[in-house]
Image (cartoon, rainbow, N blue to C red; front, side, top):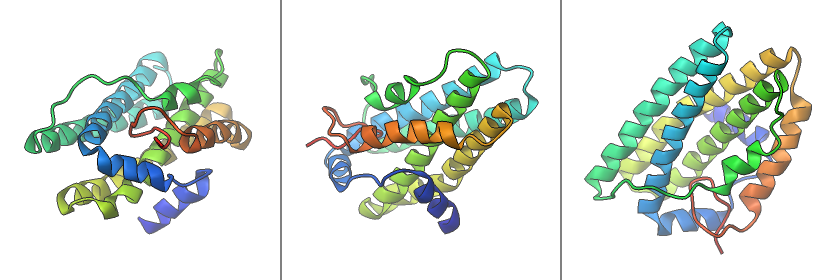
Length: 201
C-alpha cells in the first residue's frame, strides 16, 4: 500500500494543507456527512458512465465494480454516523468537483477522456486525504479510513488507464491541465469546509 500511496503523492500537485486537517478535526460530523455524499456521488458518476458508453466493455466492467464498492463505502459511512449520532442531511456541494469539470470538453472522445481524468484526480485526492487524516482520528475511524486506501488507489489507476485507452495515447498533457486547476482548488482558502474543500481560514 505504501507504494500505491507514494504513486498518488507523486501524481498529485500538492499535499492537503495542515489547516484543512485542522478544519476536519474541528468538524467531525460535517466531515462524515460530506464523506457519505462523496461516496454516493462517486457511485453515481460510475453508473452514468455505464449508461452513456454502453459499447465500451472495459469501462463497463471497471465502473460496475467501482459503483458497487462506492455504494458499500456509503453504507459503511452511514453506519459509522449512526453509531456516533450524526444525522445524514443535505449539504451544498464543494466547489471542487464543479471546478475541475469546468474544463471538460463537450464532444467525445475528448469529453470521455476528460471525465475519466477528473475521476482519477478525485479518487487520488480522496486517497491522499484519508491517509492524511487517519493518524489524527480515533482508532475505529482511523482503521476505516486506512481500509479505504487500497480501493481508492485502484479507482485512481482504473480511471487513468481508461482515459489513456479512450484517448489512444498518453494523457499527460490533459492531466497537467486538470492538476493545475486541482492545486488551486486545494490550496486556495475556501468559505465552507467540505471533504474536498480548500482550507477554511
